[in-house]
Image 1: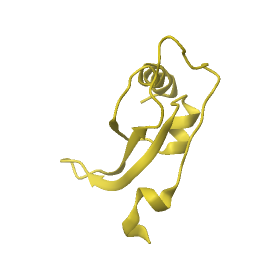
Image 2: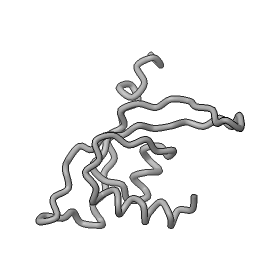
Image 3: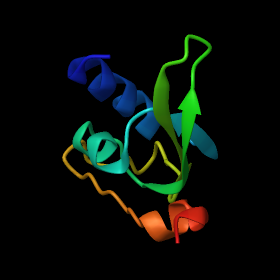
Length: 90
């Protein structure tokens, strides 16, 4: 997926009050694409049916979007704490 596609998807996700979201991009890449007010809940290695290995990242929203008080497109934040995201890695 291109960077442009991820930016467009992030703009839509920022206006969506998702509870949990599985995404194939890490927190830094997601924040760089413009995804806002999210936190990494868990990450896990996965394998496709074609035997390709990848990591899936599960995020949750930290603040609900209010269309009456929209966020700035410039305002981006990433709250990353790998110790909480994968307790088995300790």
